Image 1: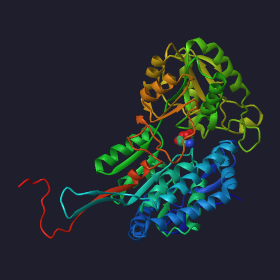
Image 2: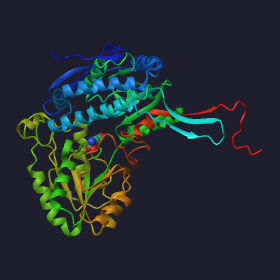
Image 3: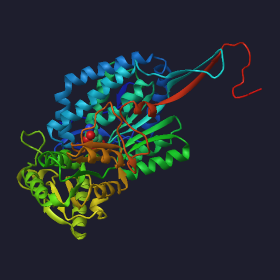
Length: 493
Ligand code: UN1
């Protein structure tokens, strides 16, 4: 018997009016894990209504009290970490140790934002006039639509929901249809932690069916989205027309630069982890490796040897290094790009194709794939593939490496391996992505620092860190005049 799950609207679990459901499938085995509602515009309306009504009280609850509820939620997450991780591996495929990391990132964010309840600081400053007081304070902005992806199905929802809640907003949460169980677990935890009805509402269903009415609803003040550049662009256009706020995290085409003076073994570790972790399905994945020409033969051999040894399989099994990709569409896209790479004249060094040996045939597996002889303008060096595919690009100098790195439509992460302190600082200054790592891979962002990118990666907003609070609050500036007379600013006489 397969379990059937419900939406969560105004504190109640209930199916959708449409009466329709869909299957949540394990991408490693094809097994059906649960049935989830396929909601429609009616559920969007109910969820937004509940959120906007609940906001009246929630915003009045002192922020430290809101933070205490988040703190309780974090405590429950800690107790359930292993169960959450196993469920995550089953529904989206990443290997268990990475699933634990995803849950841990959610725990970190929840504790961090819980504590922000006592730190929603504003500023006080002298007024330019006497007997007048000036201050600024953060205020909630209203109803937040959180539209989240499947690749970090626990962490990314917390990046949006926790700062939104602690700041006094209410939320309509529309998770990816491919990771509905993680959304269920998260909302259940918030319910158990004592979040009042209507403060978070969860609706399941397909992107366009729910996304359009959600974005267009005038009661939704902010749309926070992580996902594809295409959908992000559509959200931006609709939101801009309606004059509403939107915060977008989209693609990446991240690079690791390796200089000839680097610790090459360390660089190889970083490359393997960043290119093939989560089967390359991270917006932070390293899909370009920019290598100084003198070390290209040595590094290529090392990378290929290491990639060859990675074991594909079900992420729940010990010894698996690389899990499946999420769905058929993703698999087709990855295979299409492998074909494009070959047509462009890149050299396939390892991988390519779909892996179908034994048990692998039940799931959607692509072996770690490495292309050599890649030039910076090839499509495989410019476009996001979102799979275990990486491209080796030779360069002659640091300057050229940085220029190649900066020249893509995206700007999320760059890593550089070098032992030369001058090169490290030069890179830190001249790289134009939102995140830079020196002597580490491209993955490993921490929740108390801003996360996001330049160019087509985002719309200039950042998630996580203090920067997240700027997205989920408005500034209110207050002047208190206690002079007893009408003082006029800027008037000289
Ligand atoms: C993402 O890929 O969408 O730095 C987020 C990292 C993780 C977050 C990735 N902490 O790779």
